[in-house]
Amino acid sequence: QVQLKESGPGLVQPSETLSLTCTVSGFSLTSYSVSWVRQPSGKGPEWMGRMWYDGDTAYNSALKSRLSISRDTSKNQVFLKMNSLQTDDTGTYYCTRDGPGRDFDYWGQGVMVTVSS
Amino acid sequence: EIVLTQSPTTMAASPGEKVTITCRASSSVSYMHWFQQKSGTSPKPWIYDTSKLASGVPDRFSGSGSGTSYSLTISSMEAEDAATYYCLQRSSYPPTFGAGTKLELK
Image 1 (cartoon, each protein chain N blue to C red):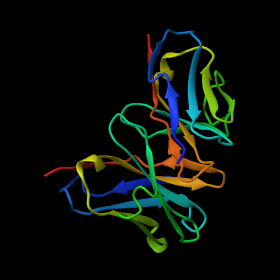
Image 2: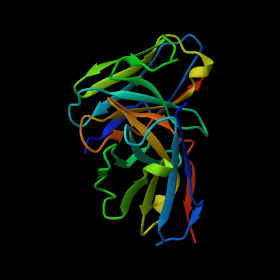
Image 3: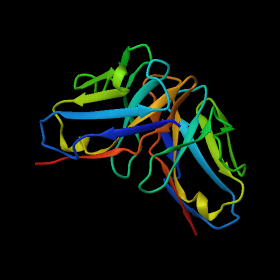
Image 4: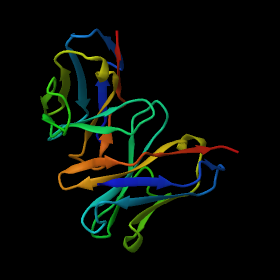
């Protein structure tokens, strides 16, 4: 069955870089796109960016200068790197599968990231 | 980007009561999508393409709307429906979510 799982550090220092991995199973990264979505506690989700099935990327312009998304199809993994973290980057980070006409149809369990010294 | 405004922000409904949640877009969108999220879990697709129920969603739920105004309706509230509901538009980049409507059981 389709599964996505995020992994990465739970605590990041201000001004440091966040690195997260999304490991997927049950589908191919060359057939489906994967998005990163984050959600501050008690607030609505925010789309951060997408790794398209063809290897192209798209970013939310609000984060584009700090964000990079890449993948390793041989390992079924998608990576997120975001630099210059601040306290308002604290929240739960999810990866999602984006199907044809059905974005965000499967979600990982999420990883809680706290930005604090 | 398109801003989605949900109302109400929070509400409580009694079992059997009809519930309507509204999502208004700052510009016209082709479709609206809805997600349900319970505490400590990931959002779940709930309604897509304005009115189509995701797999496993009870038929007491329905969605409607067009242009800049959309709604999610529960015909008869049940305890398991208590959750936060988010609307999503992906007609225009970037995809944007509403801030959520927290629905509680009265």
